[in-house]
Image 1 (cartoon, rainbow, N blue to C red):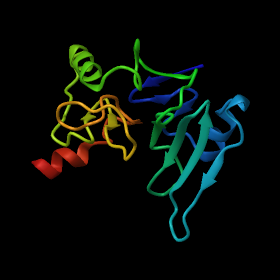
Image 2 (cartoon, rainbow, N blue to C red):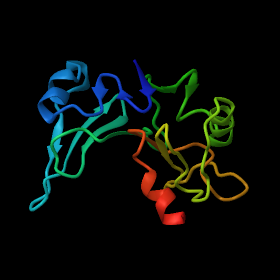
Image 3 (cartoon, rainbow, N blue to C red):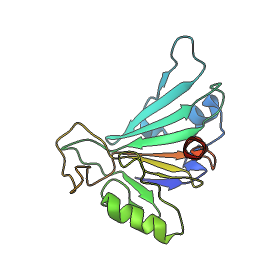
Image 4 (cartoon, rainbow, N blue to C red):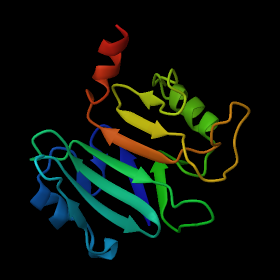
Length: 166
């Protein structure tokens, strides 16, 4: 199975802006039973699945009424998956991060690596994690060679970073 990132719209079949009920209805049965987490006293929610060892989360942040982001997590150390997470033709969890970001820049996107463990592509909006406590291959800077998660948000998802620096 392929999970294709479609920034800033989501990861099919999860579309940003949809309601909890719409997300639950859209997820294929092959993904299994979703876990819905709502923390006491908060209106936000997270809907999670594990698809062939790849973690999939629909985030309903803020007032908890609509999907604001979709986050995908690599299978973990020593695990493989037949499910590919694709950004164009690039497989996000098996393409070295440096190459993934070089290709993103080649698409005309600005890759912000000012926080090396949490690079982002604002405006598109993609956010990555390059952090793990697991024993994985690391680059010369001590970062995992591959990203460990990717988040797709709407065009404004990372605007707070610009205002924090500005």
